[in-house]
Length: 132
Image 1: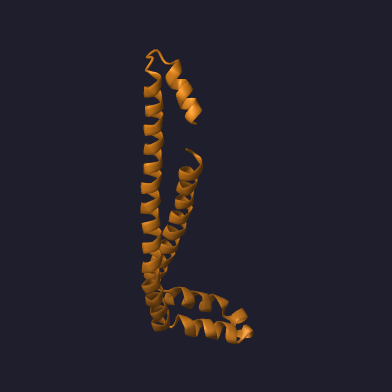
Image 2: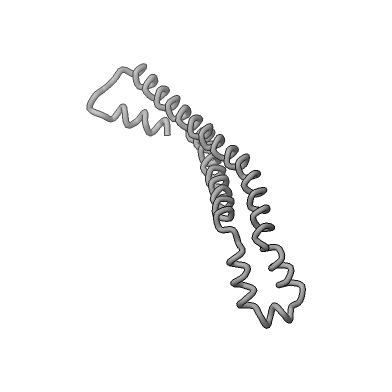
């Protein structure tokens, strides 16, 4: 990449001094690395904070599941397979009604944010390490 930029600067109509070309390329390289480090820091902070927030959200989701009776419906559903095969629609609707949607959506959203920030942070590490 550095050679491409150097050739581009040398082929333009404006002919800067050779020491200026090297200074320009060094500044571009430093700026790219700095931007990659800033993005990496922001994404790492986002990922760690989503992981830290995930712990109380899971505790709240577990409490909501036990309060709504979701665990009881699950135990009824899998305690006797004849009952499950006969009343599968009613048991399924009861499970859906007892599922706390708010806690589930928040926990799945936090998992999504964590994995997305992990993916983007790994891209920034590759950019900072190999691109310059």
